[in-house]
Amino acid sequence: MRTIEVTGLAKTVGNARALFSGLDLAVGAGELVALVGESGVGKSTLLNILAGLDDADAGEVRVEGVALGPLDEAGRTRLRRERIGFVFQAFHILPYLTLRQNVALPLALVVPDARAARLRAGEMLDAVGLGDRGEDYARDLSGGELQRVAIARALVHRPALILADEPTGNLDPETADRVLSLFAEAVRAGGAAGVMVTHSAATAAVADRVLTLTRTGLVANG
Image (cartoon, rainbow, N blue to C red; front, side):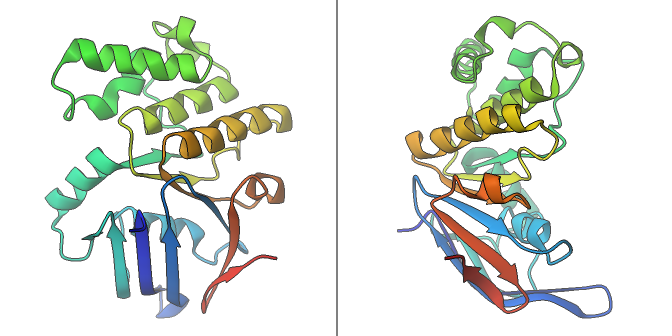
């Protein structure tokens, strides 16, 4: 069974302007897929639909066999909390929490043992090369370090699906390469399905598959 399966997805915006239709996608465990396309074609909207943050006009999204459409908001929230990780371009790291506390946030409702959550957060900070910075605050970090914290937070609860929106968009090329390698390795080693939106050909090149989003669905590159 694929981790995420999408069939016949369609979405319109504004004055019934079609973003895409007839969109099919399947991503398995340990596979990283990059989505590319022109600005405004709906890449971020598609990512939000995959996460259950937005609704499609037609079609179906299943995460580990669970259809998102019939779920109420509480059900979608629970699924996101337990099975989905996010890496955002803007980081969304809370400045008034330590790095360890930021990384542990997804564990708050799924790991009742605070000590276990703290240890797991420490493990993930070690994995992204920030194990000695756990008690630091976000204001003390560079953009590349913040993005590494964001990746650690996205992976800390061992999600089945990881969604990333321009994960290296704010980084210099050298830092972007390091962060991207870390992200790709984490997806594959953790057996998660990864879907990454990017405008960068260099970023897309690390994926197992590169798909271009068009109004009539996804087209495989190469």
